[in-house]
Length: 78
Image (cartoon, rainbow, N blue to C red; front, side, top):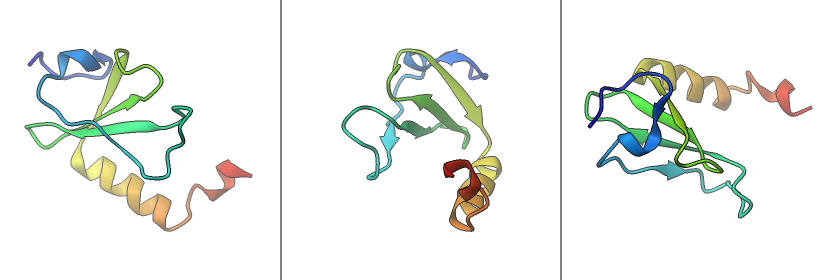
């Protein structure tokens, strides 16, 4: 696997399993996430699966998910 960094090609992340939300729609309007061997999490646009992946720490993803659950970003849907 290529060294991970923000903007790495998602196709360079060999052996990862990409997962999308059950709420994603059939038109590809979602992001996909994959756990990396070092504990980081890769995020890619499902419409461009060969495009770049953004790499986040587990703590950053946890903060995002908990913020979403708490409604911190609800104003972005208005």
